[in-house]
Length: 348
Image 1 (cartoon, rainbow, N blue to C red):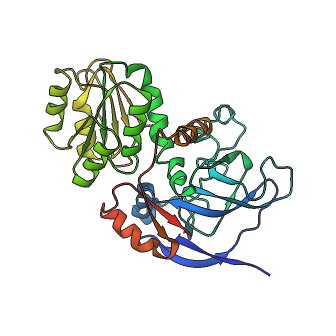
Image 2 (tube, rainbow, N blue to C red):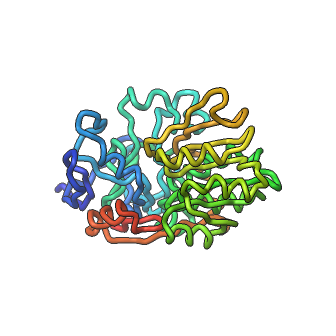
């Protein structure tokens, strides 16, 4: 007899997410079925639901949720390393597993996933905002150990994405340097903690929301200033006119990328992490000399292992508000209005 479960689905372009009943998936060869313990809510979900019909890239209905943690419930046929009942986090950016980047654990940059129809859970494949989640391959699981799944689930994106972005700039964040974090919400407040843990840099947080600025101070920012037209001048004052060696824009809007470009220093890194529509012009005279601009995507499997170790030793902790699955549509409305300063986590 077929079992059913509750799931949060985006069912039609322009509609709101709905809680519906769907069949519990059966794991095939090499697959793993998780009983979901927690699923994080992300601004990428809002971006998906904002896409117009003519550009929408996925098949509907789509079960949302690309930040997942759960307990192994069943295996498909084949040999497995893990055991039933083990708690795991889900590495989200699934790749082909065979190409050069995948062999390095960089499945986030797999060149073959799209053409092979391989999608991350919640971003093309059925996601974690359900009572059960089907994981395509055991290599996409990382043991949680004693970590709380509610706090660990957002680390799979809201933690992994800033960790990947920040690691690239570590050689520049030496004593006496400055790192600017624009957007102190879900990803930004984790980025602040990572910068404080991994570098001796002065950390300057920027936001327009008073709650998020207070959160930034609480998690370790040396300074929290308003992300407005005066922010680049304040950054200059805090750095003796030099600017920041690394700027991480976790919003990516037209306004924030403009601010980011005015804050970065010569030979500095400007990293656009947010999925807004902002861009940065690059060319002679548009930025300080040898400033580098990048727009990374997610992170590697190895980096997720490292990040969870940082969480175990208390170096990073996600500020979460948890909600039952039935309330998810209402929580998305609050999330869209910016009423949740850290990360919203759905607990089925």
